[in-house]
Image (tube, rainbow, N blue to C red; front, top):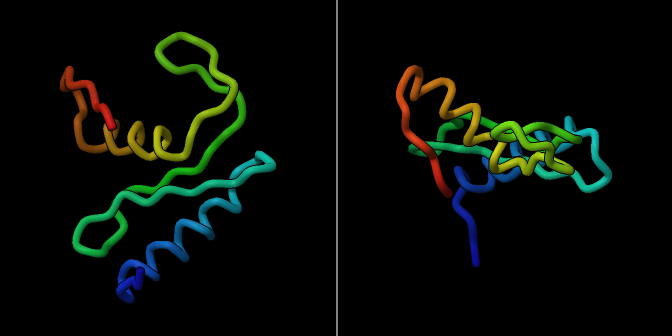
Amino acid sequence: MSCSNKERKLLNMAGRIAIGSGLNNKHGTIISKGGKKIIHGCNQERTYCDGKMCCSLHSEIDAVRKWKSCFLRGEKIRCLL
């Protein structure tokens, strides 16, 4: 499977974002549109999600939560992957 230059650029960017994770297994996620980064996220240590304590926050969920807070302000819409 070959990647386009835009995809390769986004994958490299996700790798650089993953370095910001404080966990041993580092993961980064990019939400993009048209080959341009909109939001990014990385996995994080213990966090609360919907009032429940989780062991860790996946990078995908971190990115979706950031996207939701930026683009769905005030709306009662649940985002599911």
